[in-house]
Image 1 (spheres, helix red, strand yellow):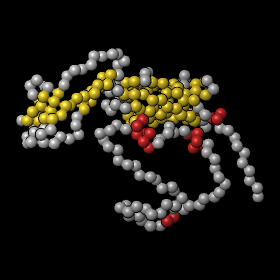
Image 2 (image 1 turned 120 degrees about the vertical axis):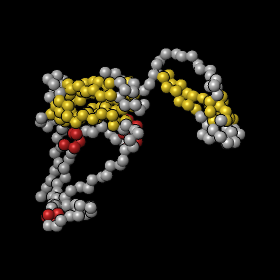
Image 3 (image 1 turned 60 degrees about the vertical axis):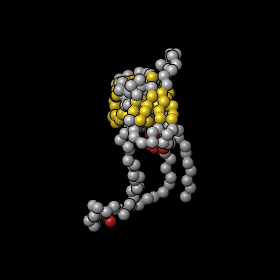
Image 4 (image 1 turned 45 degrees about the vertical axis):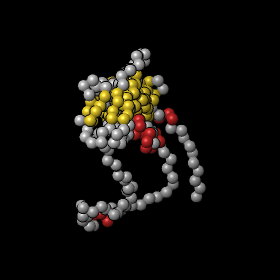
Length: 235
């Protein structure tokens, strides 16, 4: 018995998927709108598209890449035989409170970790958008409040055996952002100057702020702001 491999390029089955938002930057709460364009050889394609918007920082943290269905549907298969049975699951009643120790021919699934609710790691998910005669599908969603970059990932498939994917990055930010600069801790009797950092994302020059503030750490009691707003003293 002899076996040889004949490699056939599947690139003719690859769809070109473009995600085109109206602009690259948005503010929190604004509507993010755009189009997904699916073509093949320059011609529009009627396809079904899944679109997701995920936090770019989270994706980079876990090393997540935009899914490529071509790698799955046209993956190389080795020569072999695999056998499995489900009789062991039918012949006995399983305790619903106990995990099934039998795997049969199924692959074990990995558990998903809990996503903290104060972060929006996924801003939008549309599982089945349909392109029109021009090969385009529209999308729209509200930008979340967290200030970060989001990756819009689109995966498409037509009625036959053609697949494709594409992505684009958008940024959610405020035109002017102020962050406080405070000491990490104060001991009794300490005096510190507090401030803030201004981030100007408007592209226009601004005046440098000159307001100063001082805070004193008392031996007991709390700190409160003085009527002038420039100093803090013991209550």
